[in-house]
Length: 148
Length: 441
Figure 1 (cartoon, one colour):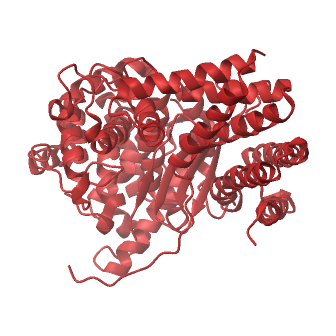
Figure 2 (tube, chains in turn brown, blue):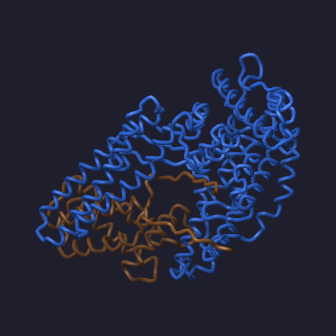
Figure 3 (tube, chains in turn yellow, cyan):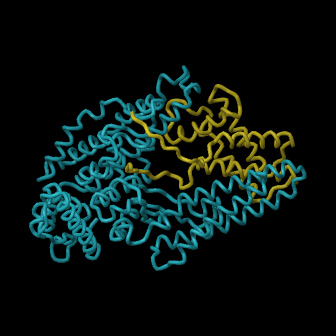
């Protein structure tokens, strides 16, 4: 049995879980918005929260000279974004993320977006959410005998 | 069929499991610590909020006319909340069930509370000690109901869980790790010492314009995580030396014991030998290599592990070795800055210096005689650093003097264990006495 040390992290909820939760709630809000073209203050708050978490820290993330905290934030976003929007450049993926965050914020402020844009945003968020691994994968452990 | 209704049933079962766990603990209020009680109240709020939020949205989806979209959205809603509830079960239930006084060193609670308040002034942090059957040390923030429910208007309450191995309840090594290294994490986190480092993007993964080449995104993510995680460990070791002095180093190899190879790096920690080298260097720089009895041990560690930082990374997973090697290369160079930032962020009165050694030697003499050392003169308490260093000096001597006093055997394996247990008891008693007298920082 190994001695295990774990360290404190800045957020109590794992970041991936917080991100998946926030995006999940934003999708809920978008589904309800599509159904009734109306948002409650709570649903507007869900959109705002997702926008905050989706927005990279800079237009040019992952460029040398950035801070550790920003790198850690942005690399997760960019890697997930890579599987949603096919682009080889961090900069263009950051722009896509910022665009999605802008749209969420507009809706949260009560601005109206065309139905097809809302639909596209919803599907992008669904793909993005799926690209982030669940924080607690359920697994059964297999123990192998090895003779290395 | 695995439809939205079935997912709702699964979520409901998870919620019930969490509620049952909470009720089970609540039914025994006599064994709950103050911190646990506050946590339980907060968890009740969270469970209530989760249930209400989920139900409201589930019913709101009635408005969705497209049945396929309604079904899909409800299924996703269930998954979202199920993941959250599972996280709460994993993170909070062990904290509630492992905190009885027989399992955790409650004598340390006043010290822990004091250290937490000093490390994170102005924050409403409730520390909760709990134990597990594993050899597990951890310090973690627990999610509060405000964070779980994303309620910005809720009370600013935070919970800090401190996990210790139940089997080492009274062990001096445990006390040293908990108050030194684990509290070092809190100091690091509070003062952004390791986070303030801006690691360069390794040249070989960069494009001409300085941006990361996304062909190397996996390696870069691993690199960033190594820099962050290992950086936190190094900084916590530095804080531990500053706060406790030599016992921070002396207890460390004992805690690692035979459970880890000295020169194996792990995903979360640099290899123990690299950390020993760092602590020996830190203690030498702060004058502890010259103190009586222990100074020579510090020097010996420094010589034995002098080359530990030059050694190539030895990580089990070959795919991550390159990222880990890059991380270690930049972290090594950052260590002097880490030291400066640790010292600058710590109140001077919390930093121990060789000036404590006279008291530590006196305290050692009392322990040798089988007496607690919580008091150095009438009505004047010793600090926790004095007590723990004194105890470790008795250990270094092979417990011979104490064995003679208590009629134990320091020459047999069984006898050493028993004398050591007496020493652990004396230290716990010393801490209690110091707490009562008003322990100095």
